[in-house]
Length: 281
Ligand code: SAM
Image (cartoon, rainbow, N blue to C red):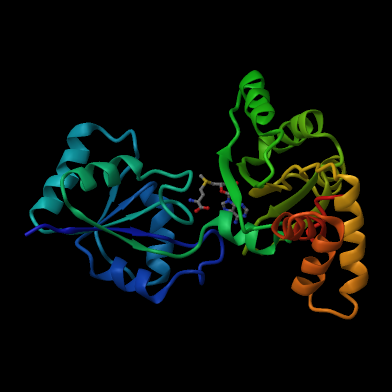
């Protein structure tokens, strides 16, 4: 009989942001492995969860991790939680989940909050494709190298940042991405002093000076706009689409404009979409 390891999401600020299933799972398991047992105690007391706590970090001694795995192999149900949000998302848990998987132990998510999704959901930046970069390196040269590698990234980019490095990171972004790159700052999500900024990176720095940099931040950076150079016939075809569109459904307008200008219908459709999403200026 093998046990179960539950990876349980907890709130990122507002204690009410926890699922009913998470509370039940934490109440009914044999042991909770927490990043910081003292911090987690506050949440557990709030929900009158009396389950025994032990500490777990990805640098926990191998002997202790083996101990947890042995309990699971003996049939125990263990919940893994971190200080906030979803474990393994810039938080401990990777090591034990990977080892449990290798041993064939069942691992289940009890999903809930993560600052990454909460921030993205209100940023107003494209979310159909995005990259999560976690924390930028603390050392200046490494931080700059990472940003340089992301300079031409066209997907929305999500970073976590600690308050004392927020300014240096934004300054480095101004240098590497340019001061007009769009950025969304989500400060203290779900908490009492939550506020947001959307604008260019240079203005984000001014906003931080006015609003102070205390609290937790998610930084969401607009992807680089693709520069597409249009041929003359594509340009004309797009103009014709916008005229025909007044009387015809879009797809028929595109088909007609493509025929008139001798361009391919599909590529005109892609250009039309790109223009609509304003990636062609
Ligand atoms: N596991 C967490 C999650 O699922 O979001 C992330 C933990 S990571 C150690 C902490 C970072 O997440 C913070 O430095 C900040 O960038 C972001 N974060 C966590 N809570 C936040 C909040 N309430 N508002 C804004 N950012 C937050």
